[in-house]
Each structure stands twice: as C-alpha cells, then as structure tokens.
Length: 221
Ligand SMILES: [Zn+2]
Ligand SMILES: [Zn+2]
Image 1 (cartoon, rainbow, N blue to C red):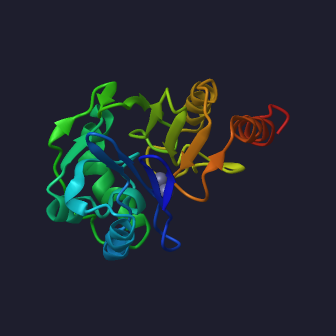
Image 2 (tube, rainbow, N blue to C red):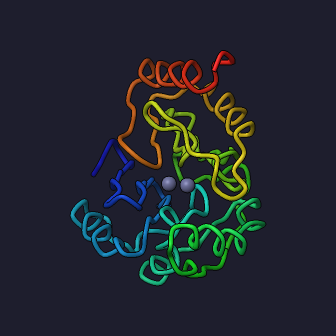
C-alpha cells in the first residue's frame, strides 16, 4: 500500500515473514523482500499499486534473517534488480544463511550474491538514503534514513513498544541499546519497522523511544 509519494509498505503475510518497503524515485529500491513463500502475493500487491517488479533497481535487506531476506534470490530473478549489501552483511552472509534458518527448522536459506556493496549513502533521485549500521538484533542490521522526508526504515531494531530479540546467533543486547540511542536522535516523522505497523508522527515516534528506554533499558530492571 502507498504510504506517501514514492513510499510503499507491504505488510508481513504470516507469523514468520517481515514487512517490505519500496522507495520509488528515479531509481526504485525494495527493502526486505520477506519470505520466499509469500513473494507471489507481494508481487501481486505491488502490481495493484502500479509497480511492475521489473521497475525495482536495487534490493536491500535490513539484515540477513530469513523472514527478511528469504525471497532475495527469487526476487532478483523476477526483477533483474541488483542486490546491494552492507559490508557487515557481506561478512556474515555465509554464517547467517546456515545458522539462523536451522534454528527455525528451515532448510538452508536460498543463496544470493551481492552485486553492489553499499556505501554510507545511496542517491536514488530526489531522495538520498543514508545507510546506517545498527547492530544488536544481528551484527549485520542496518537502518535506512531519508533526512528530507524524515523516514527511518529500521528492520528489527525497534517496533511499536518493542525491540528486536538479541538471543539469536551473534545478537548483542549492548549493541542494540547503542543502536537504539543512535536512531532515536534522528529526526523521524515516519518509522517503518520490520514487523507490525508503521509509526507516524514525530511525537508518536519519540514517545515510542521513550517507552522502550523506560521499559527495556531502565537500570532498575
Ligand atoms: Zn531478525
Ligand atoms: Zn524479523
């Protein structure tokens, strides 16, 4: 569904799936293709919004858990898009593809290759995407920030009234806390998490960070 001009949200389809976001400008970026099982359904929803999968130029993932990146290889085939990975994702690609799916009783995640290595910034036309390394939930978690629109796509770092789990392989609670401190300083009008609904309005986004800091990071607990 279209959230605002050039920004689309396709909500998670089942228990083990993730939100997909599309940023359509001169170039079109798709972030988190989700689980492969739901790709056909996702593509159908995109077409209903007038987005042909072949328009997708770049596929990014917020991290390498299969609920976010499982459909990457299949989507690349359908769209012809390039897969752009953050250096931390390239470093963990093999280990994450084997260890994490097994934990969830899945086979090894379908392999995909990285075509482009992401830098700190990706200009896609009028919008400029800042790529920030925000480890903790996983060592290869990134967030994507668009300063002009004040949009933050944060994967499994933060949700409405919650944070990503840190008990999966290579998770780190201290790092998650630091990452959360960092993103909470970004002026954000629209927070787009990996699960659950977007949080709209800077007041709501701020209140959510305050809630999380109070409930999850209060030294009394
Ligand atoms: Zn995850
Ligand atoms: Zn997830």
